[in-house]
Figure 1 (cartoon, rainbow over the protein chains, first blue to last red):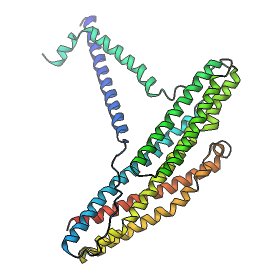
Figure 2 (cartoon, helix red, strand yellow):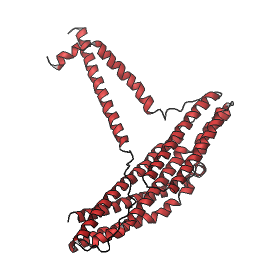
Figure 3 (tube, chains in turn orange, cyan):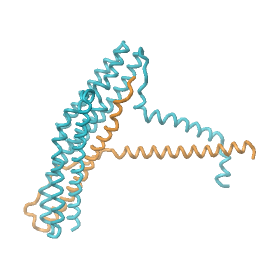
Figure 4 (tube, chains in turn green, cyan):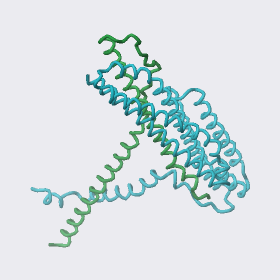
Length: 106
Length: 251
């Protein structure tokens, strides 16, 4: 095996290592982008319409209506709870950034 | 021809290009990813312009963070999760800090004495404490405002949920009432912490952070504990409501 062939083989291995490192970098970047994307605010709003009980709801139709309203209300509540979670995440992010005031001054 | 017999024929230029690319990435990625944290450079004691440049970088980073907070407050207000009054309190605090930083920037830009310029830079940290105090405090206040309104909305649903439970088959009443009682208890738990949390904010100041750190930290810990309790309770109440809705939906 000539010196030239050996050098060529080594450069091929080096090239494979570089491709592997680049792939890992891209994967890491992709994960970071995905992680930051999860903090996007949810624009669903909580309806101002409040759930009103039907005082004469004794018929099956009234029961069905009550259940339907409760399902809708449940969806709205789960939506605002996810927004509450977003506000909580903002608090955690502010904690993470607080060390910037401890940076070394010039 | 398999892969390994092909590999030696890859042009050497490509290998060189790949090596140069990885070296370039190695330089570029750290400088961009940590741009905000590596801006601290040492200035010579007599280099006024250096202090001004570095100080302006510090101010710009803080102004950007305040703008981000302001945007999040606006978003929460648009989502009807906080009232305009609650929003105004927070926006006012942001405005105070923004104008204070702007004034300090004007003063810094006009400095001709290096000691004075350096003191201005120190004041960016010492007087304002944007990252250490203002942002953590205001984000917590924003969270509490949202939580108070979420609790109020969940509380207002109680009569309707009770009505739905009353209309449910007798065989489901016990399970539904257990969930509904827990729902009400969780809301009461959250509400018991609102005052605890509210009373913490006046003590979370840059002055206390600078001169009375133990008081500051204990107050912050109390606030965090209260908000943790509130968050856990509201989530559990939401879970109870969801289970009630699922049980009723199944029939």
